[in-house]
Image (spheres, rainbow, N blue to C red):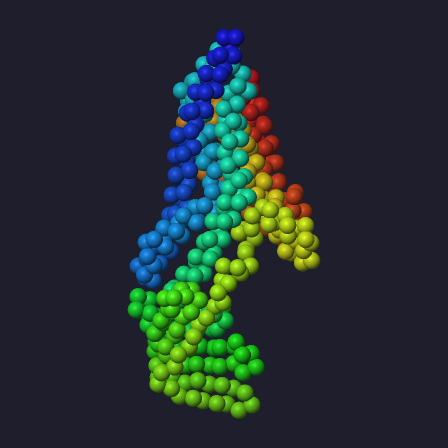
Length: 368
């Protein structure tokens, strides 16, 4: 009875020690991801005049779309940090000496991993696809409304409202372009080539993202049919327009909920490549959720090592190393699955199996 009571108290103690570390880890990895986006976001704010509110929405949608992979990473950080500290302070040794088994010490990490795994699964199945879709729609509207965010100096912008647009000089803040070239092939039989010395981008405030007016000055229109036609103009308006169903454009696989992925697979996909992509999406949603359990086990195994030097090396360094190792395996496996080199279930689950074996081996060494 005494050992059971001690075991329960020890489990509660370890569990509540991990919670602050988990929240800290989540904040750390969110900050790392945002660091990689800061230059792009700064460009949107300072160069293209995008409002702080829109930038906040972009950051929010990016974070939501990445939550399924952030949860296992934060969990691994928390388990390594907590069990590493307990091992370094000899608390693990003291708990074992009082009669507590390794299974009792492992239990708090598994309970937290189960809770985080459930949250990660629900996020991966529904919430993250929604966030990714909202980011796609917002970025598309932003690119269309802030046309100069798409048109770069000295670069051909293909797929811009079904046209190819080139400008030698771009003033993003004023929406001014100079030395403009436009190739319009919407009428495939008779494509138009428009050349102008300068122009101004005028978005439609009533239909942002769907209507943009490019007012050109001092230019020429070239039309090549059976004969070449050349028309000079002082002012010429080019209307860039998108249909109102922008939000209903085909979703990317990452923006599909788990149920939508299942529905597409059940309907039958004739294209083998698209079928593999859908299967990859289905399996990786589950694999990332189960990864929480795997990371918890390997975190306990490595965190309770009897090697003091390893314990003092720091949980963060070990955590980053394991995450990099896992994602190298995962990216390689996903590429093999999409290309058809390896069957999708085997490829996607292989990194989890490899890390599961490492976790079991590390736990076995510390079990006694």
